[in-house]
Image 1 (cartoon, one colour):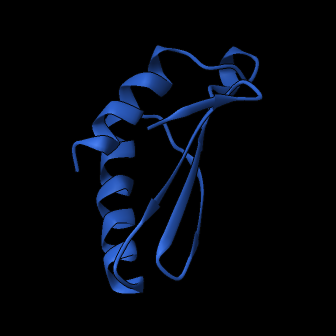
Image 2 (cartoon, rainbow, N blue to C red):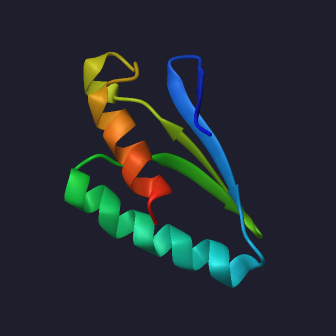
Length: 75
């Protein structure tokens, strides 16, 4: 479940191993391009952490963030 914290939508995804995590990140990269909205994210081994915020709107959560979060959840 995505959490709202400090004007960001945040979520951590956990996978079986690094290969699965990296594969997920590759899918998200193409999805982010489609949405023309790019996440702040990090990866350590099998975990991928996201922070979604809209920089053009003063670093706050907008519909762009919610739509990208919803699309990420569908991967």
